[in-house]
Amino acid sequence: MAQAQGFGRRYIKAFFKGFFVAVPVTVTFLDRVACVARVEGASMQPSLNPGGRQESDVVLLNHWSIRNYDVQRGDIVSLVFICCLSTLPLDN
Image (tube, rainbow, N blue to C red; front, side):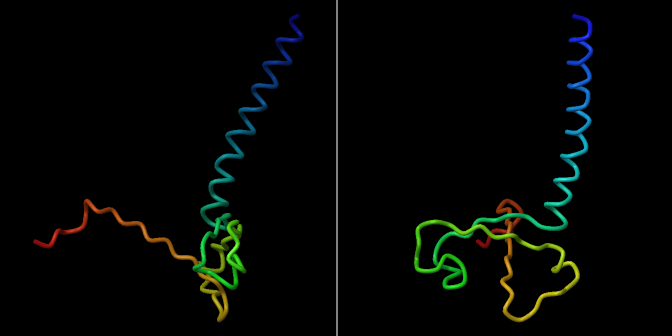
């Protein structure tokens, strides 16, 4: 019985060690190197989602080449616009 508790305790300890290492590594990779995105609709046809299919395409967005300004003609560039409406001045 004591051996079973020792095994369970070691298992939980190893799990948490792996978890606390894997989460920061994964978040850093997705933020700095690359991430996966879904492309839906006709805006990227015919390169992505050809033929007007209803399914979405999955693409890998490379953050690394943007940081090095290694964008060439013919590359597909994804832009994200985040706007907080509460900080914009209101025109009266």
